[in-house]
Length: 157
Image 1: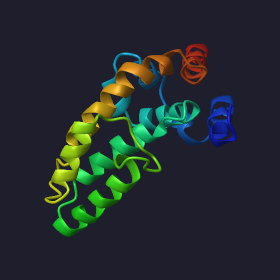
Image 2 (image 1 turned 90 degrees about the vertical axis):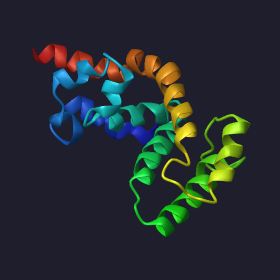
Image 3 (image 1 turned 90 degrees about the horizontal axis):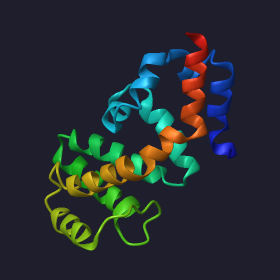
């Protein structure tokens, strides 16, 4: 595993600190029920992000989470500033953390940046969510990361 996620290996091995000490076997098992169960659990997104880093696609989850935070910004000028930042980081062609969206969606975002509505990135966020659900989530369930958690909690019961 890459050094960037070696913390997860340590957590799996000792289980006495950090995220794994707070995880229940029930929560880990629920992650396999649906992608939504993983994303709405307390620690699922943290573990899932560690897995996505192994696939070099953690920008998808980062973007999705950033959009969730963006939608909660009440102040219009703060939302406009955040919208520009999200566009530069994830949306514009050759962005540092560019996500995989189609050109019409990208063009719609460019148009909506003028207003910076809370829903400016909603279509892109849906696309990214479906990419994760359809592509990387099934691989996550088969990964050594998830299987390690399942194995650990099966041995405890």
